[in-house]
Image (tube, rainbow, N blue to C red; front, top):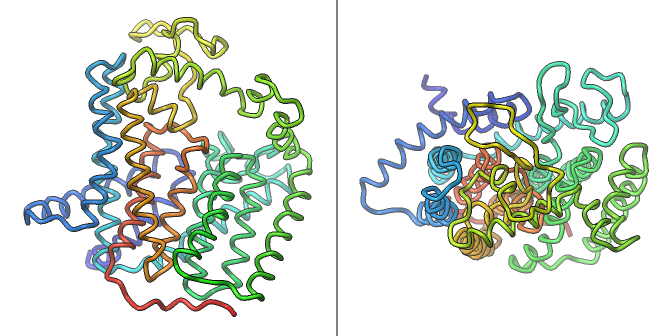
Length: 432
């Protein structure tokens, strides 16, 4: 028991990552984090003096939770809205646990190496699937995700490897760089970029681009001015990525994803835009309509699927179907969710929710700039991992669903925890 208590941060965080592709088992480590985090939070509240990091985590969380609470009384399905409203504090406490442990001085480094090893395992299996159609996870085609393949021989993988790797690209490569493993960091970054490409998850492509575009801002804030050799190295790396990507993306299966993305530039029209967005344009049109018809508090968070059919003249008619369940209070259902955080918030929590989301991103931007100037790059790696997925112009899974809720609080807890840890002289060194 003493060993478990001493290493609870590393064990629970790594177990969470290991279980990500394996059904609902990932909730177990999160629940334990929430229990421990709850005891720690209660202890801090009793002191009547909240730490600065706790204020950050409470303030950011409130921007999302309060509008969700306000949307519940008028929700078209109070039960579904309450699932999010009721479980949100548990995920918050899991994030608080991660924040507090880092604040207390626990090192993220052992978790970094273990999570990197897990990512290497996932990536190896995904490459196997891409190269060998007879692999045990089934033929890949446009999506090569190995253990994360849906309904594979062993379990339902959920098709989330690309999403996960999009955040791990920032976390692993920048953290390894911060530890002085420059060559390994570059190799890991290239490997993960390749995995995002072959995963077929285009939101992960946006995640990688978001991280890369943020690096010059990080350098500027930290006062780092690359030398001539560094510029040559950076340009060479970009050239390798472009060359390798142009070859990989033209391979059978993956080329269809690229063509789908570029069709809007080849033939600009609403139809081609909808095709590039994987048929989501009418979903977003209905999300805006739901928000306009319920302007203050929306139709209730986590309820897009039941709110869309109720829109006057819905655009997404093709998504609407009858519910064959006599016990259901709803007769019709639409798409499961909007696949976009702003649209999900607008339809679920109205313009009050959007205002809360805007405030959240303003506060997060301020925190991010502070983190960029932090003595260690480790904090930067974690906050960029958050931005990589939750960048507001990206596409997302159900923002009010459990999986995304957990992803939200894991990275936010890690980022604020690393930032809140006692500043120490920077041990990073940069190549000439």
